[in-house]
Amino acid sequence: MNSTDVMTVLKWGNADAFYLFFILLGVVAVYFYFEYINKNKLNKYFGEKVTAWLSQSVSIPRRRWQLGLQILGLSFLIIALARPQMGQSEQEVKSEGVELMILADVSDSMLSEDIKPSRLQQMKIELSKLIDLMPGNKTGLIAFAGSSALMSPLTTDPGALKMYIDSLDTNSVSSQGTNIEVALSYAKEAFEKGGVTQDQTLKTTRIVLVVSDGEDQEPGALEIADKLAKEGFHIITVAYGTEKGGTIPARDRYGNLTGMRKDKTGQTIITQMKGDFLKSLADKGQGHFYFSNFGGDHLRKIADDINLYEKTQFASSVATQYDEKFTYPLLLGLILIWISLLISERNKILRPWKGQYET
Image (cartoon, rainbow, N blue to C red; front, side, top):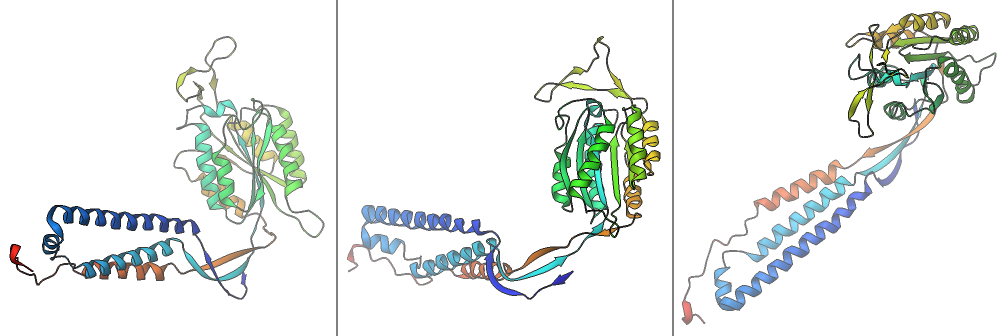
């Protein structure tokens, strides 16, 4: 990671904070307005001489100094909120890792709650955690059921990837079912379009991570897994659900439970996790099979497994960094407000009242 020369450029990290000056000006205007109204009322009812005597305990100059310091202090606090940044440096960031395509099962069977909160929700939680355990890789996301959809091409941005993971639901694809064969073919196509170009001098490790309950029993998936393995791909599978299985909740558009889903004969559907199939898929793909269990260490094992593969250095990117200077106006603003609190607006020496004989 290399850095270039520092540039002395002033910029603002949160320029919208300057709109707070309008609020500050409004508060000051309201303050002086009510001060003017109250003074006129007192003069009207008591006269200027009596009003002056009644208000002599308050020092107007000291009050103005106190108010001025408070306004100035708040102004510096607003400047601090705007985050002044002085100095700019550019750093070349290089990353290395593998190319990983996640195939996430979003079929209706993943809504089963035989694991809490559901197979689908547990899968999403674990995928986000797994992304944090594997920095530096180029990772993509494909949602699949009866059809497949590319949610995210290969990227090194974990934040964007986790956003796509969080958006996964049964509506992410156009048709239901569970067709891993089509998803694997789609993954190969996504690698070829968004991955590093493969040639005789550069070979990138490509891994397909299938997270599913494994209800697909079509032999075509095993055949394409074997074909991908011969081309240098590796397939890792993770099973979600229980062998005992569970029902699939039926909910209305507001998310309220209306019952359990039934088949065409009116029988309640029981969906079971098919670990044997997912294990066979991993074996054909020269990878490993894992079973998701609450509180288990399978995520760490998956990350360690992927980290063992040969890594490739990806194209470097330039990151611009700015030196934050908000602490200076923040400190100055707090000091000014503190000083204003030390100023007393009270007069210690008061004139005695001489009543109507005062001239």
